[in-house]
Amino acid sequence: MDRYLTGATIRGLREKRGMTQVQLASLLSVSDKAVSKWETGAGYPDITLLEPIANALRVSVAELLSGLAVENANVSANMLRSRFYVCPICKNTVHAMGEAHISCHGIPLPPLVAEPAADEHAMHASCTGDELFVWADHDMDKRHHVVFVAAVSPDCVQVKRLYAEGPAEAHFRRSGVRDLYLYCNKDGLYSCRLSGALQ
Image (cartoon, rainbow, N blue to C red):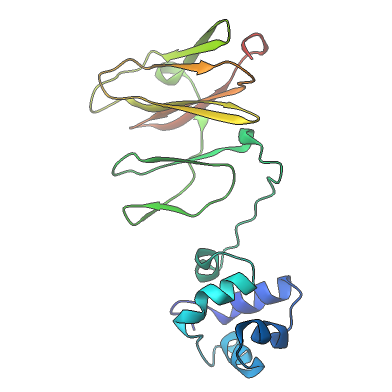
């Protein structure tokens, strides 16, 4: 069953839901013997059953096939736990509030891990009224530039896309912004926490 789905995955997800083979079989309109065969590797579920199996086990088809359950403890939808994904081909940028399976151009994208901003990736900020102005002393040419700057508060993510040969700066609404992110096309993701006076 290792071709596209393992019996251990089905069994593990079924047991996690506190479901018997008979109960799962009933939800899928198959026999409990069929479920037993899948779980022992003696048979394969028909590919048309993948989505119904995933629905019955309360996971996505991607989670079912990978055997990796996405655990999202972020039940309060706190934006401060944001994750960014960037396609290495087109620089498509995706934001998620928790674990996600993201791909672009057929490439699975891992969540970016931010390093502390320093040197040319250091971000500077100033406030005027309710506007937050953010800038970096960073090269902005086609080979080396900032792709985006983001301002994150507990209930909002603001992302400003930047382009080569333009300025490495952005304007955001100041309200509640705590963290800043900068993505460099060569060096990756950087972050910094705003000082209390600027929040």
